[in-house]
Length: 255
Image 1 (tube, rainbow, N blue to C red):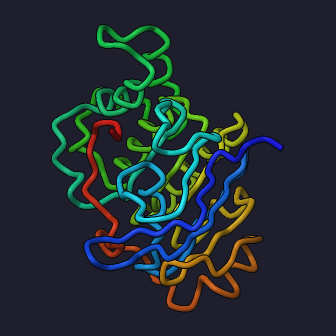
Image 2 (image 1 turned 180 degrees about the vertical axis):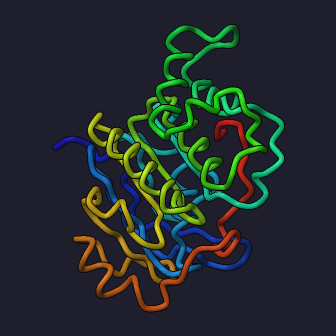
């Protein structure tokens, strides 16, 4: 069988002295769209941040594309959209500059190549922001800013796309645009892991839902069953910094 894109086994992690993940098993296979659900503080953001290396595991194992995390270096294969916060405003950059940052893992220092420029424009077209290419990101609305951050991840043409609460605080029109962009990525063959507080317009795309409660997996299966049995009770809306793993956004790539 083909190696999973993400294989998290018995994962434990803490924020300070507080245990957040308590033996999480999570497998995402090539081409799957998996939603990570749970109430605020259940460990959703900590789980995805451990996958991209921002929160160290205190126990368990993690493999990306069949390679142990400690040896994985091919980050050009991974696109990451962190949770949006109010601290994201005031970035002194244009839309083009922010989205172009998504190509850095694929390029060397120097002038942007034609392929890079085309990838940036294509990513902005996918999220309906190509007409704002030269605008400063500080002039955008919250929903537009979120579209730009997603375009930044899409510009790198990742095989694995990890998104933490991409719909939180975004108006319905932007949610529909982002769902359409994600459909394009899935059609291209991308593997997707999403942290969500509700499925919304993304529901038709979701193959599996994994529900966390108190840092443990309590459901791994079809989305409707997950929502009905586990996600709705106490499953409140995510606000900036509500999950202890939330952090201010940065325009650079993850290191």
